[in-house]
Image (tube, rainbow, N blue to C red; front, side):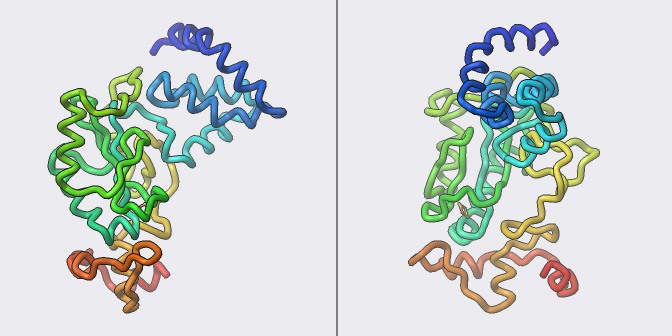
Length: 255
Ligand code: FES
């Protein structure tokens, strides 16, 4: 997108921008709605959008960038028209998320945080989506899909490719690179699709730097996790998890 294209977009969006700003006593409170607005039109939050939003919200560019990089639902680089975010956290892992992730990787031929060559799909494994009672789950362009099975992976992909999936594609003002993470970034340094330069994603849940899932940590201490209230974890799934190579030194360090 050229700078004149961006100027045209700003002019077009002016009534909506004014209406959003008018809702808040302080301009900075309009930051998130404005980021949503521009991302919706551009497919990601471009540097021009960051500069403009910082200006109208009276915050620094660093404040705007840090807000955007905090949320996995904002993208700072172009991504595919369909962003597939599969939950890899505890409840979903215990209910078969590993098989779902494997099926997506196999079908798409891409890895976590990568985009297919045709720019249609970006694939991402995310932390808890707060729908643990319907695990395993995922989001397609932020729309939930619950109680996933490997068969549903094929149904979703086939339907998107056929143009019949009931979720609209994201805007795509620029062609995404095949790899959302560039060669200069390590795997652990990228938190979300389209993120740039975010801190280490090794947090309390999901898969840690060693590749160990949180379920394996529980098992180490002889605890049988419960996937959601009143719903015991499937022992076969827990037993079926293949431990990642690690040693106890790393385990001690992580705790
Ligand atoms: S663990 Fe997957 S939604 Fe909470």
